[in-house]
Amino acid sequence: MKILYLNPSSQLGGAEWVLHDLVTHLDRTRFTPLVVLPTDGPLVERLRTAGVDVRLVNAFAPLLGLGRHSRLLDYARSLPALVQAVRGLLQVKRLIEDEGMAIVHAHGLKMHFLAGVLSFCLQAKTIWHLHDFVSQRKFYRLYLLLAEVCPSVIIVNSAAVAADLGTIRNVVIVHNGVDRHTFSPSHLESRKDGQLRVGIIGILTPWKGHEVFLEAARIVNQRVSHVQFWVVGDEIYDTAGHQGYRRQLEQWVKANGLQAQVRFTGFRPDVAQVIHSLDVVVHASVGPEPFGRVLIEAMACGKPVI
Image (cartoon, rainbow, N blue to C red):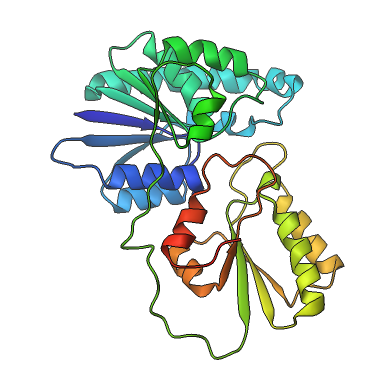
């Protein structure tokens, strides 16, 4: 059976790791995956290294600038991007027909809408994989309307996300998993430097609570001098509200004289190794967390989680 996967980002955030793990662990004697992404990036490289067929549809790239903080004017200015998206849809439609795809598995809200359009003109079954809450989005009512008629199944990662959809039919809860071969208690020797390492891991976006983490770091540093604070991750979205966030955090650290105590590691693909290097993992989300993949990864590694 051939399955086409749609995803709006080629970077590596939590949802992208879920897609990566799903595709790379398929039984290739039964399923043949093909992943469609808008641009080149770390996810493309990792999938191709694993032998997965990846196709780039650059016509979808202009849509990446639209997000939860976009205004009506932003959408109006993005009409050329929407025209490009239609061209991208036609490319994907031909790809599905030419390759004989039986299932279209869409990740991310943008791709849900695009896959919804495709569902009206193709025989392939459509799956929406939802990694986020949608009830506070501007298009919530439209999303619910399409959710009733477009996908054969909606996969959600938690009971909370399922509840957020109300009474939508065909909702299935599939919790995110962890590769226990990769995420397991480390047998590395304890460090001899006497330093305690506390880290927050995740994409740099305001709702993940990095400012809360840094304020806590400031307070702890006033009382304990041998603690290092790691901010692991980077900006991966081009949407309003995400751009320039790392620079904002770095300026706060400098203004509070914490440059020696706080380390920004940037994007790290070796998340398990990073967790092994930490003594404590902090999860500081200030908004509802759909799942919190890093929580179970850290616990699988035997680390205390705050």
